[in-house]
Length: 267
Image (cartoon, rainbow, N blue to C red):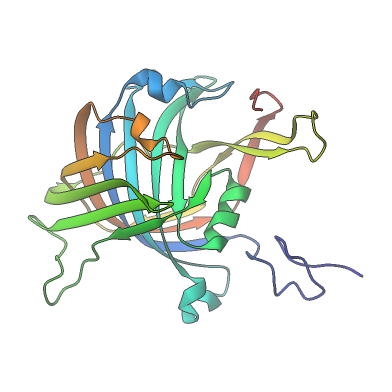
C-alpha cells in the first residue's frame, strides 16, 4: 500500500494530511513594531554558524499578522476554517558567510496547520492567542491612513506576552528593515534514540517565491512585553523604539535551500 500526503497523517488518499504540499499562498495584514534591545540577548539566540548582524545587531521586529492562506487551487479560501489564522513573531537579523539574513526566533500561531508548516520551514512555532485591529472603510474601525490606530495582543498558556498600540503617521517606502532579508532558519528533529543527538540539523535559507504589497505606512508604537514562566520573549527587552508599520501583503512560499547541516551544536 502506498501512503500519500505531504505531512502526517499519511493515508491511502492523502486527504487527511495536516498540510498540503507547497506552494503555499498568503494574503495578510501586517503590523510591525521595531525596536532595539541588548545585542547580547540577540546573540544568545544565534546558534553556530550564525553570527550577529554587522550593523545594528540589537534590532528586533515584533510582527502581528492576520492571514488567509491556501494551496494551489485556493479551495481553502472557500472553507475559511482551513485558511484563516493569526500569528505573532519576533525577528532579528544575523550574518552567515558575510551575508545578512533575517531570523524568526519566537513565533506563536492559533491553528495546528500553521504549526505544521512551521516545522517544515524551520519556524519555532507554538500555539498562542493573537489579536489585532482590522481596518475597514465603514463604521468605527480605523481606515488605513494618517492618524489610524491599531491595537495588537499576544498571549500563550493563559499569560499575556506582548501588547502594542500603533499609530500611523505617513506613507513609507518600506515595512521596516529587520524582516527585509532572506530567512536563515534551522530545521531540528531529535533522534528517537537517546544519546544520538539530532536526526535532522539543517541550516536553510528561504524567502518569498513571489511578493506583492500595498502602500506601507509608518508611525510609532506603544509596546509592552511581559514575563511568563515558559516564554522568553521579554528577554528581548525594549531599550529604544525605532518605528512601527502597517502593510497589506501577498506572498507565495515554495521551498528553501539547504546551506549546511550538522553544525549548529543543538542539543
